[in-house]
Every structure is written in C-alpha cells, then in structure tokens.
Length: 119
Image 1 (spheres, one colour):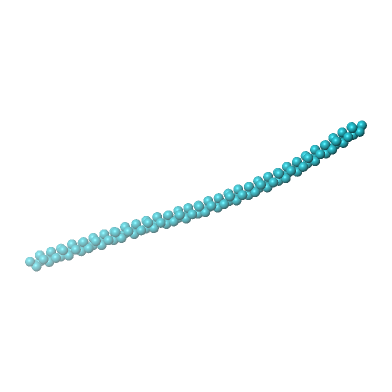
Image 2: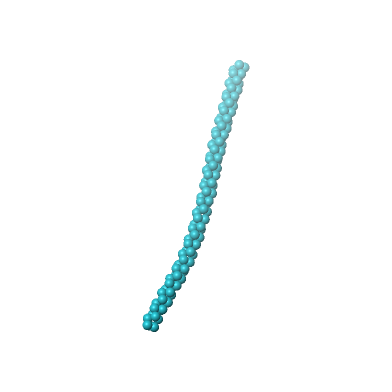
C-alpha cells in the first residue's frame, strides 16, 4: 500500500512537473511571439519609411523633369524668336540693298540722260 501511495505521489509530482514545464514552454513561446511581432513591426516601419523616402525622391524627380521640360520649352521659344528676328533683319537688309540698287540705277539713268542732253 505504501508503494502504491508512493507511486501515486510520484505520478502526481510528475504531472505537476509536466504542467509546470508546459507552462514555462508556453511562456517562452509567448515571449518569442512578442519579440517576433515587435521585430515584424520594426521591419514594417522601416519598409514604410523606405517607401515614403522613395516616393519623395520620385516626386522631386518629377518636379525636376517638369522644370526641365518648361525650361526646354522656354529655350525653344527663345530660339524660334531669335530665328524669326534674324529672318526679319535679313529681309530688312535685303530691302535696303534693293533700295540702294534702285537709287544707284536711278542715278545712273539720270547721268546718262544728262550726258545725252549736254551733247
């Protein structure tokens, strides 16, 4: 009977030990889960931060592109205006040259006419 009681007690103690071990394991697992969750949150925050940084960089790049596009348009406009101005000046010079040629021709005629009259 004593043996039976002893066995019974041992079984109880064993069960108690098992329960305690299980509890400790669960506690450990819970701690690990918490650590893992915190690690995951940290990673997510970092990823989000990187994404935002990338987004910001993209926005800046787009702004620059828009600026350069506007700049290019302005320069093209200036170029066109310059070419138009140059063309106008050429035409002006051509007209002036034509006038001078006409004046010269007129003088020549007048001289010839005068010379004929003198004879």
